[in-house]
Length: 290
Image 1 (spheres, helix red, strand yellow):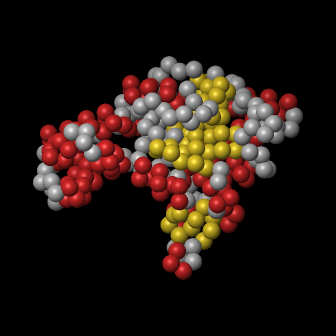
Image 2 (image 1 turned 90 degrees about the vertical axis):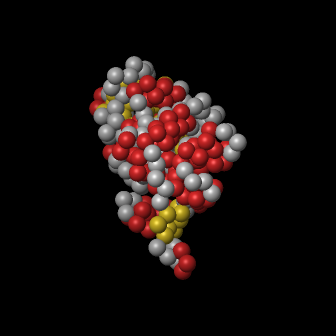
């Protein structure tokens, strides 16, 4: 096992902060050491300082992206924080005009806070962005919820992540069986195909659902690609890795892609407290752009 010095760890702290805005605490020293050791071995290098010099030389963009992939935490699962998907269902139905009466609409709006979902023109899809989609569980959960609740009305889900490795995995829609434990049984049966033979112990998200979801690479700490405007954005469990100023910049960047009246979901352990933004709280961890 290669040993990493404090000075070398500091170099990689700076590297991942500059690349992704992620602040690594000293407690992550063992993680950095373990995740990058295989790259030192693969490149025939004898120290983390030599590997850092390779990255900083700018001569190998593939290796740099590989290092970012390895240092990016990717923990997610289907139907994480389920209360958010109840809110998403109501928002999407209202946007498609499925609220039954003005009185019901008013009552629900009061319960959710100020503002309302932007109404869609006939045939226009309801668009949701999973902004830190990791291996795709969140994006496919969103697709299941929308497909189940919109009665054939159009929708699109876009998943992005800084790690090209996990984006590639997400596109397959193929997961170990235990990863589907949180999927409601009816949805698991409807939207997932159980693996047989060599694929036993796995499941595949059905193609009919996958066609509503697309994945691409995006760094939230840099200018965003042209993703279009969204009716809802999930930015969950990623801001905990940012300092205050980086968080403000990332949220501002993400909100620029959200339609007025659209909703922003953050993790239950996160908030926008102290950040001056044009949003109102709908409920804890859910905000509406005003």
